Length: 318
Image 1 (cartoon, rainbow, N blue to C red):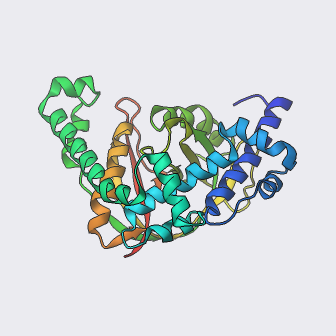
Image 2 (image 1 turned 180 degrees about the vertical axis):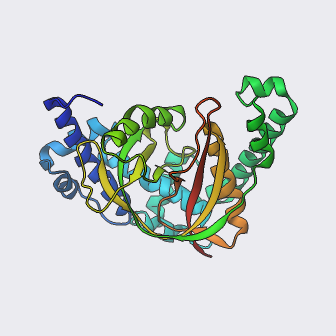
């Protein structure tokens, strides 16, 4: 744990305030988001807030809002073929289809209609790549060892990986969370081990269910700007602390797929669930967050790196 110095207290306070702003933005992308209102949420003066936001996030408020709106629109264009481009533009906060199309093309180098047509093909190519890599690893032990999939248990997981998906109603869940910003991958594991786990031990939370929430699509968001929340379920009387904020994961219907394998394989499992199983299921995404759920009894083997979790995506009928 970091020492509780005045500087550390100040850093934690800044983190809490900025996280409140980022959460508010994501929840209100379809509405006007004025600098003065966001400054009030952060309890900073409007005069200083813009400079503080830029220093903290690494881009201006206007650039951040535009990027988040366009990233959400890109996901919706691919996953909601029944929605018009204008409808999606308005839902993510653009005042007109023309303004949206201009901004979208500037950001992604293609028009929204072209993105909608070509995105399924790109996902098919990713799925094909996943299966080809898996088959190559199974048929070439030397290469499998080079890519750290040589142990027999890992081979078994690769052979048996299928989408065993169930639909389940989950209750709202109160969680404490810490945020990681950076490329998805090994950095998240380090964040859990070196930052989150010591805090959980200190607060007697090791026997509670854990969740991992990746807020951004790494195919449309720069790696250094991807956001991930490491969460742990907490009792009703647990309050926010300097290190962790408290929120509620919304309940409702989720498609849940069990996962057992090594950390790097989780991204492939997400891709298969969202772009292979989901389009055939008669279901669609809704606005709640996706997450990985780590039950208390979930196993993790430190020697092989094999872990267990449940991949959960919020769904509703088409």
